[in-house]
Length: 265
Image 1 (spheres, rainbow, N blue to C red):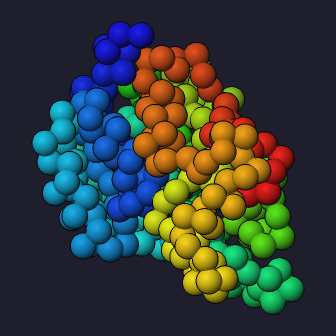
Image 2 (cartoon, rainbow, N blue to C red):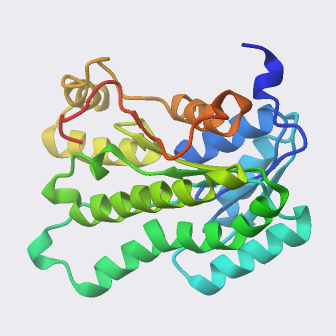
């Protein structure tokens, strides 16, 4: 594998929901390989902190603030990106939330709010940037879903449903637009040690009187690799999909879960 196969110099990328975790690692990976990367999150402090950490990479990094659950905010973000960088040819729809709640007590507005963030944000960004990719006959779109889309459990039912819809959207669009050399794929992470999992494990540890690392060890026992994934490992899957190494990959939904498969998310 030559370095030129991962060279993204001359490409402009957008990564949503990218102040931490998989999103932040993806920004780092793409910019490290030469892409000019715009990214967003709701928190100005978070995106500015990430931008300051990545200022010396081969590609440029450009932080934006946006609420991806709000249609007007998504439109403004897309306007700002195109105004500053031009139309992107790489889009990583990463933003998402995974609240744990009881199906019987969830209200319609909670379902709708989560679908606006996890699904409609990707629909809106893809709809906005896809035409330019088609016109230039080169584009790469990656949907960050979850293995819970394939192997859901009741505690994450709305999250799993929204992310399953995201995979279905990617697969359908891939079949239609591959002829334009716009390749659309999904990545399905399993348990990845992100700030979200750090917070969740911390709450479990505190409630059970356990050490944080003990909680992570317990939750790793059913993972064949024996550990949680790391955000950069997921970012490398995205990097592969947007690079020339994946020029014949379209409509794929790649599990990146350490072999967990049908195990509980």
